Image: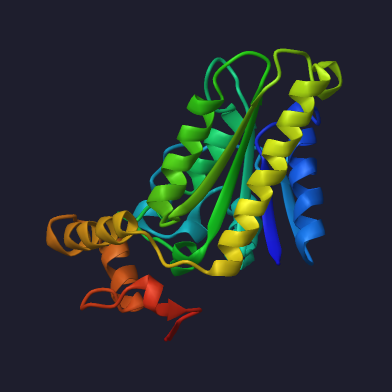
Length: 242
């Protein structure tokens, strides 16, 4: 299986260590190929809000040379893993910046059919509190991308890191991470259909795109995908009808 991992912080500390436990478990479950991106190194520029990706095409984004490899890896992967430490009770800025750059993935604009069949795992760590807030921010974007099966694993250390945790708490944290990896793996193997919520959201967005939204680029994209008159992304595999 192919996995795309996006690290939301340049620090190879707690959140990075947590993802390594996930990777190790995934590799033990089956053949695993990992493509990894480290933020902000692999996307060093902040989204400028220029709307070029919405109104014209993502290829016109001034940071396209950085976003394109990430996009390609995400679309090719079977499973996605996003990690972010908690910064001031929220998602880390580099991860938020990446999600901003892929705002055009939202169903209201130009969602990728590949996303409707993917599963994702979000990993977050903190010394005290806030993993729920950080993971919610990431999950919200993934949901609007069309991903239904999103798993979360938040680890609260109450210490500086894994090595400083009480043994019982460390063992519990490692078990949670391994369990999260197993859930991701099983979801990918099961190849589950999109949820009713995701399908409903898609139908609502179709009404919006062709009903009252005024964005020719979005309308053209949806029409080209065959979604204007009844087609759906979950009935298509790599551009072919099932």
